[in-house]
Length: 488
Image (cartoon, rainbow, N blue to C red):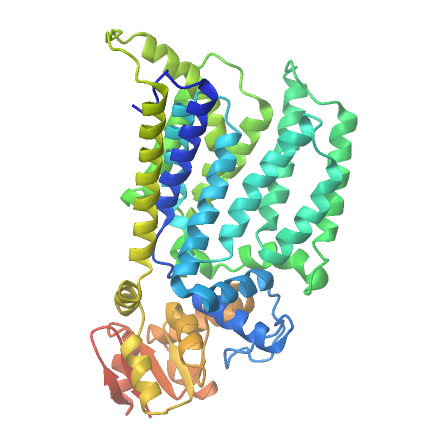
């Protein structure tokens, strides 16, 4: 078929790369809904209206006016502009394009036959898929694998170390996970030191490693070239320091391998271990250090599946191919006596295959971002009916809502303020735990609602607080299968 030997090797390689990109596009095309997306969009819209970055809270009554290190301000403007231009279709396309760019950068870092690269990239895409959502985090995934490519080019003498400075300035203005880049540089440099200790055949001079460390230090300092200034240096520590993340937010919890969506991570991990044991090659210290460090991060929090997959996939491809090649040689050879297809026919087949995959990807993107589909998923996950009722009755006030609904209400009910949303670094442990205790109906819930002068409580019907409210004289204003509004 399309991979016939009647085409040249370079054209066959190009075809596989194109097919790989189209398959990833189809995998990543999905309905762009995420609980954090809404407050990102709301903040982006506010910045477009104000003409400046928003660096204080304007959305909640618990932290109104408080300083906020808005590490994703540039991403929020980009997302808001996309939403203005093309609604959910534009956001869905942006998600798919980010996934394709990151995976094709991974593809280029592999040294193996095209079909094997394709197989490993698809596995990496399956591992990364749980973190593909309409959030600034996608920019960090692209920039992380881009940084790995930059380090490869620097080691080969094709790039300058000073490039790290503008790279990290851009990264820190797009998203706060620039710290992953610093971790990558640290693991990469530590792996090179390990190569020296193991007397690896190809090692970099110590002088060059010191130079890289110097550029990395300057890049870290340059992170402060940002509307938030030196406060950007604190972001990684502020986020990790919120202990409630592990209990309240699934993406910060350790993996649950009973969930089929998280099992591709185990497949990749097993493939790495088998390849390391069976390849007969000495593993490069840099690859070993990077896989180990990012594997540990992935086991600590499932949101790190993506960074792990993007950095481990080239290692799996390069180590695993000798093992796969030996396995293929043991299989009986099939000798088909068939005449090769003419070059023109092969080209037509290749173009048809690529065109079919492109149509499938575009059709899926159009379908999953269609307003009817978006509305269906929205009504399954968010209090659409309750928000419509509040808007129809022209009611305003301070809402104590579900944690995952804060951003939705901020975007679609601009006349209201909420208790909190997904900005964990803004609220901190104390406020998140106070919200959780009140929603669970624990002692002190009444004092919490009174202290913040809560007007309405909007939660899922099964929260224990609602039973306490009913006994305390609060009235049910609205109720459906998804949500309940209590007021007083």
